Length: 270
Image (cartoon, rainbow, N blue to C red):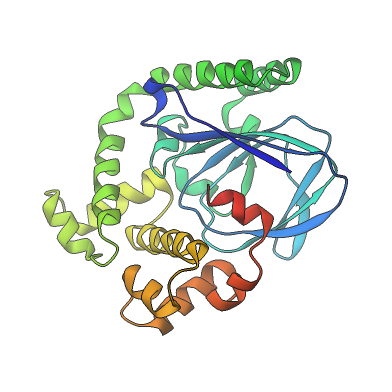
């Protein structure tokens, strides 16, 4: 397996966390579980391998051009064959700049991006298949995103406001009073909830929980703190609440996770 990260151009840095290329030349089949990240992704499958994701305990083949909505619970996946995948990882709020639909409709599913955007993304996929050069592939992706960004420029003000609110929520993992944050931004907590959900697919509470969960994964990966310290540093009053939330996002306890960190979730911590 090989995983490469690519930084976006300066003009797209406020919108794209990073691009990545994942390649696997092994035909070995494996199962894994994807955890909530707080971000949406678009993935172009450029290899011969296939992926399947679970929907109500049944597995279905994912489309060649994937749009990952907000994952709010563990999602089981299966891999078969050799892969070349080019992914776009958006910031929590920034996918809303590029898609016209309310983001929440994509939650906990992998949609066909062709159904969402139409022929332009199918043309892009064909162009990506025609070249093996990584720099050219990234350039094609960026040209496509810039066109989408310009076409949706009227939505920028509200989405920018959402970005500022999310920053306030994430700034201090031990301070998560949504009413206080709403007051700081001069809006009601009800409007804050509606605004964030419309542009991220998450409620403020869900965003805060996922943000703390992701922070806990980074602390666990360092392997230099006991779980009680990690729970406190992530804003939990006690270890039992931390374990409960962690298990809701992974299906396992923090201790069990530490003993069996999977390849896919190692990549997702990038």
